[in-house]
Amino acid sequence: MRHVPLVSRLARAAALLGVLVLAACAGRPPSTHPADPLEDLNRANFALDQKMEHTVVEPVAHVYVRTVPKPVRIVVHNFFSNLRDPLVFANELLEGRWRAGGKELARFAVNTSFGILGAFNVAGAMGLHRHHADAGLTLAHWGLPEGPYLVLPLLGPTTLRGAFGKGFDAALEPLNYDPYVPSRNALTVLEEVDTGAQIRTAERLLSQSFDPYVMARQAYMAHRRYRYYHGNPPVSFPTPGRGGEFPPPAGGGPPANGPMAVLARAVADVFPVSGQCLVRQRARRCLHTTAP
Image (cartoon, rainbow, N blue to C red; front, side, top):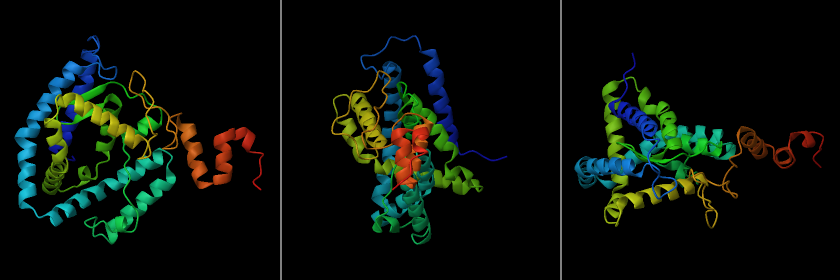
């Protein structure tokens, strides 16, 4: 029987706890923020996460940064980033972004081969810069409502849709399929230490704010909107719906109109003439149109 890493088991348990808490607290009065109806519960989980951050993550990250030379830390970070690239590639395809997915696949191939298993970011020097895509954003592009804002124990801020996305991504996490348990656990711990080292500045700014919880919630929502638009957001965001749904992208990504719209946009990327016809005029009217 395949062993499951401790961190993965904790992540699944925390996600399950969040879903159960949602069901138990369905009758709670809403908070003043429309996307955060479980604010009291979220604040309690946020306080728990902050305590874990200050007592465990920060000290370990501090020792890691002080004792490990920066070039070595960069190699470690590049290695784990390269491991995530296949997940980005899969989600780019599911969003209908075939060109971006092809570039991500090329990036993974270059860094894995010439970059020595991703230790060196050779693809970045060639202009193949890393994108970001995950299952939560893919579900958003396919039109799944975001649901309430959540703070999950040990996992931090997310939403109900994001919690489902984390579950899908965890199922495809490459480290979970390492058959050698000691190396898998060691790499998992090292990945968490690397993540803690990357967010030290953000955590420092968060602790200095007047209300760290509100700042964390606003930062998370803004960051997810930015990534939903693939780094090309509109000048100003329209007001999201009561559930926090993102409005359709204005040139920053495929519209969240369901699978057929995503498929039509993917066809447009590969076959520009007939594909644009499918997108703009729908299939039946385009089938009889001949390109000049």
